[in-house]
Amino acid sequence: MGADQAPVPKQHATVSACMMVKDEEELLPRCLESIKDVADEIIVVDTGSTDRTIEIAGSYGAKVYHHPWENDFSKHRNQSISYATSDWILIIDADEELSPESGLQLRQTISAVPPEVSYLYFRVEDKNVSGRVMSVMHSPRLFRNHMGFKYKNFIHNELELKGRGDTSNLVLFHYGYHLSPEKMKAKFERTTQLLKKRLEEEPERPEPPFFLCKSYGMEKLNAEAIYYGLITRQKLEKLGDVPTFFVEIFYIMALSFYRMKMHTLAEATCLEGLKLFPQYIDLCFILSDICRVSGRFQEAVNHAQQYLKLRQLFMSNPEQKKSLVFYTLDYQEQVMSGLNEIREAAASKQTAMSGNNA
Image (cartoon, rainbow, N blue to C red; front, top):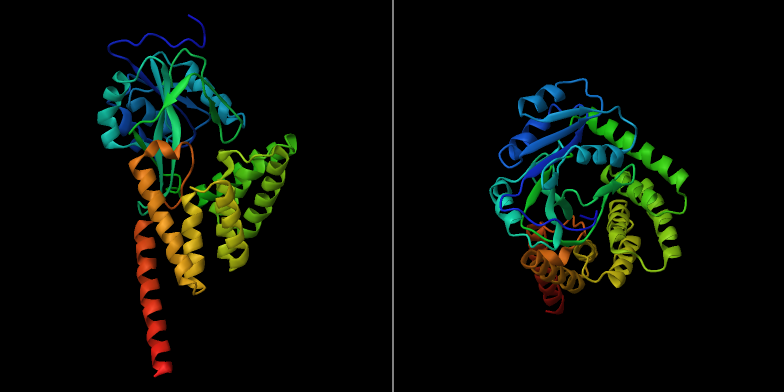
């Protein structure tokens, strides 16, 4: 069988859950608990834990392999894949959890996959400490073994896709914010250092400044986010068309401008992004708020209605989202509340005008 030839599906396909870890004793139990009944084997590549991570993994029957950390996420991800023996590989991180419903559906989903489909997209919901969904994306997390799948990039690793993929109703919860302030700071510093190293090594590529923009934006370091956002856009201009993967740059920059009360630049960034990606819902969300606080109520209503229209589209047709990351998809209540404020403000303005004309 060739490396790129899809295998003939078995009646009872098996699943290997693969992950790489280091000092994950706080989050690992929840992750392993969510997959223990659906994975035929759990593969853990440990890159130097000094806490109870290895002990916890062993208590769930995981096969633990030790590899020293080499500042290369893809290398260690690929190491975990190399040990898998099942028909399918499920990629999951220690700070993630397979939703209970997806745990029940996983086997049935696999059994229904056509032979020509080699990988499936999961909905990944990024949750904060209060449980609120901060962003939503679709990521290929389940793929056939023995087809040569591997990851690239030493940070923000990305699966090199092979064959045909498909969407699914399977969901992962990501708890990347559920760490102590000290660990969050260490994670941020490690990530930005690696990205700056990659920017030095690949100065023409837009990916390093793009991820730096995201990293600084998440920390609300707005000036830094804008700085790397501008660098990203300069590099993207050299490519001609802006790939869909980079659409987030407009949201992060617009949000950073908005936080700094630079509403004119925030609005201009949103409008520029919508020219390229008319269905980018996050930009409609920001535009509605900008227009609301500036008293341009009808424009605010128009952008809010477009947000609600796009939300309905994406919720009823998940495949339309493809691999886009949305930060405001679950902000419907905020949009509705904003619309109520607009109606009240418009009514007050009309009442004041009527009084002046009396």
